[in-house]
Length: 131
Image (cartoon, rainbow, N blue to C red; front, side):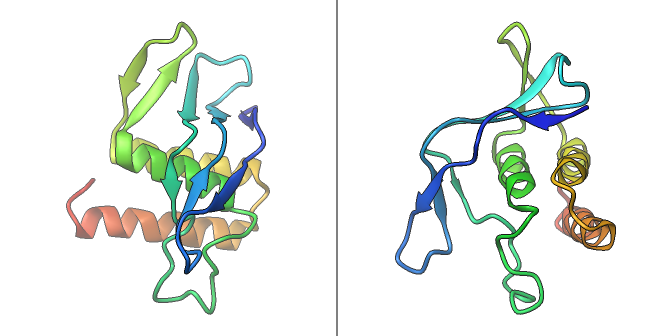
């Protein structure tokens, strides 16, 4: 089963606390725990967690889905998956969105919220032609 192998350690990056910076590397293993693919988010990466500006009152930027959001933000920015041997491969936006869905499952996000967030990122990808 997929898993996070590190604790998420962040600090505020700006005064409004809308951006956060990773204080240490954060790793998510895709698929099986002994699988070949990982998302390695490096120390110093800046995230906004969930981009929920319009519905912040309903879905705050941080929550049980926070770790999955960091993984997704990294994949959207860098489109890079690290293989077990240390080499990397590129992933598509769509693949990154599905990894986000998987990671939210690992975080035990309520299914209704999980699919709402997944639907939102897929709609955004289609509307902005980042399929």
